[in-house]
Amino acid sequence: MNEVLALQSIAKSKAAANRAVKSLEIQQIERALANLSAAAETIKERESLRAQRKKEAAVKKLKSMMDELGISAADITGTSKPKTNGKRATGPKKGNKVAPKYQITVDGVTHQWTGRGRTPVVFRSHVENGGSLDDCLI
Image 1 (tube, rainbow, N blue to C red):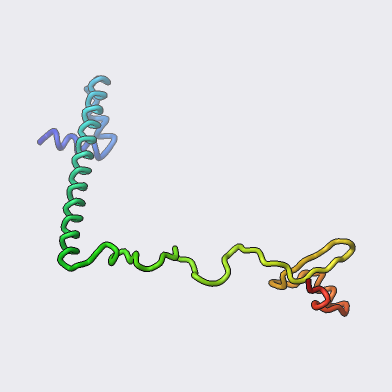
Image 2: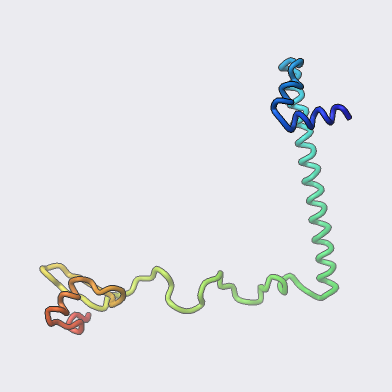
């Protein structure tokens, strides 16, 4: 029992670990570390097996409950409905290009506009100078 208390104190603080290994040689400390690592791996494997068995038991119990109630996996997951992946079924898709609706050539440069969003400066100045957007329709 004294050994357990010593290990607990070593695990809690570095100072306790330094006090405990003061009288040991480096080879003894390295062997102790190797043994502790092996023990930790054994415990991890044991816990993993225990968790796996627990999961298998839960699945078995769930399957028996589903059989009793006449429920299938499709009833739970809802696979009978078409999958939409959370996207809208109708409407425009994000990122699609829209064909330009208006076109104007100013100083040899052709400007195009879809008719959506803010009116570009060249089209705004065309309208301010007495022009019409209908003149620029493609």
